[in-house]
Length: 399
Image (cartoon, rainbow, N blue to C red):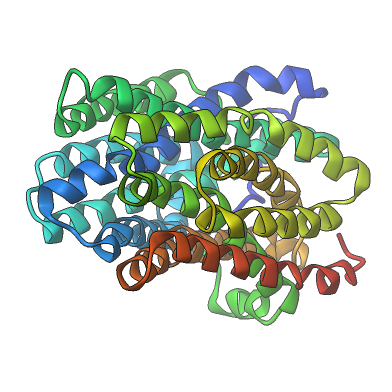
């Protein structure tokens, strides 16, 4: 885990505009980092067909990535404490590229799972150091908006990844496409090492007593549950959507990926609106309302067909992504001052493991016994149940 309390050698800019160039560079690297983990969603129908995988096997791809991500974020402080945040971010990019190249050579489910775990571990080093850098780049009064700019990266990745796959698969195999993207990740990691502006502070490894104090906080677990469901509403549903469209709605891979990409266009700029609303109306309130609305929109995706299903697929992510700017702002204030970085470092990997790994696997397992649509509907119901936690969260006056 990593500390956000270390001071950067750079002075925090006096305005949000002054921080934007460095923030955009960092966000672009996050775009590549996130793409390396979600690229297997549009490729899943092809990989599944080539290797003869079940829906549960396909869903386990994201459990493997999330498991590596979980371990990596928990242990990221061991890396950033030795080579500082900037070098950790660069190393994460280069290592992710190497792992993608390794995955492109895998020919069995077992080898793919090991490769995906390694990819998750490499990519997971980025986030704690990336968040530490944002805190040093953005004035405190604009923190939710700074997080919102950073959140543009994964939302752009949701759009660009299936489009790039749809185009590239017309010319190269999925293995060659992974190799090309691997080279790009390595090159950008090197460029960030040379030109990137990031926190030069080093992470710290929290003591067991500090971890214990954070884990005792009911508020921490409430936010983690809500975060998990929100990640499922974006990453988890996205991961299984192309396979759902191909296997249960008869679409070809190119058509399915185009629809998935189109469905995410409207959500690209929504985090900016979510961050602004969170600053104005209160971050906790926004978290609860957004998660409830997302669950209500997710449930009928698995039950509907035709234009209704397509409309829900388009609207659901536009609402879902508004959760994260406020959630990161709330998460950054949990615990005593010295424990805030620990709350971030614990919540994020737990939420990604659950929402981005376990729940997609559950959707796939339900798909083997019933249908993927039933799995998606089940996930939507869990989101609605999790939103019930929000009134409890609102009772706290500390953030």
